[in-house]
Amino acid sequence: MPLDPSDREVEALWLSVADSGAKSLAVVAARAGEGTTSLAEALTRRAALGGRRALYVDLSGGHAAAGLGLAPDAILPGEKPGIGVLAFPSDASALAWRDPARLAQQVAAWQAEWDMVVFDTSPLLAEGGHGVPPASVAAAAEATILLVLAGRTAAADVREARQRLDRARAKLIGTVLNDRDNPSLLAEMEREAGRLDRLAPGLVRRVKDGLRRSSLLAQRS
Image (cartoon, rainbow, N blue to C red; front, side, top):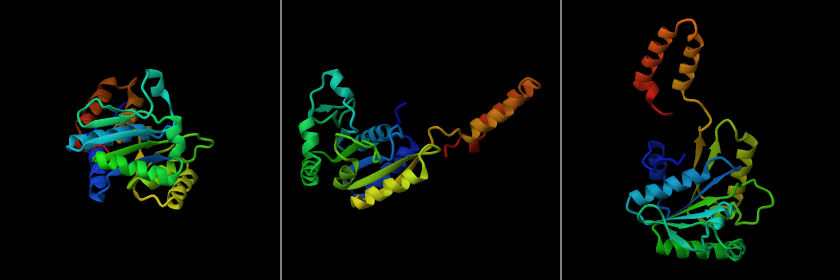
């Protein structure tokens, strides 16, 4: 499910990016499926909400957009005003951008035209990729966010991802813990209360109603 760009967590991240003064941001993760696309898209939309012209660049290595008949290297208008989308680079561009100098030139060209450039990258620890190396993208961007999926990403993978970013001299401004697969405290307490459902359904309903009315438990961690 897409992240709401006005969500409190997205807002906090965006303020960190804005405070850094960066005009380009790479969203990276150690492994696939950690949520880089959702976060990159949300930050792009948040930049646009703030009046910035924002470009979303998909360098995640997937060519799903090609099946929609979209031209490679084409910057298309996004669903909201002020947003541009480069759905996927051509093979020639991807090969050229593997050269850090040429990638840096391209990023500078985008930054001259757009107020914010957000990169959705392939996994840092993926082997045998044919796209633009994510560590190189992070190095070319003025800021980088490392996304970690709570309960899934191994600590060793996080350390290796940080080391690769350090070796590339990427400017890491934050590490984000994605708790997508972790239940909230409210959900856990409701589950525990549900154990008594067969014995005291009326009591369980009243307990659950009380939990849901709790302003403390309604807060997102």
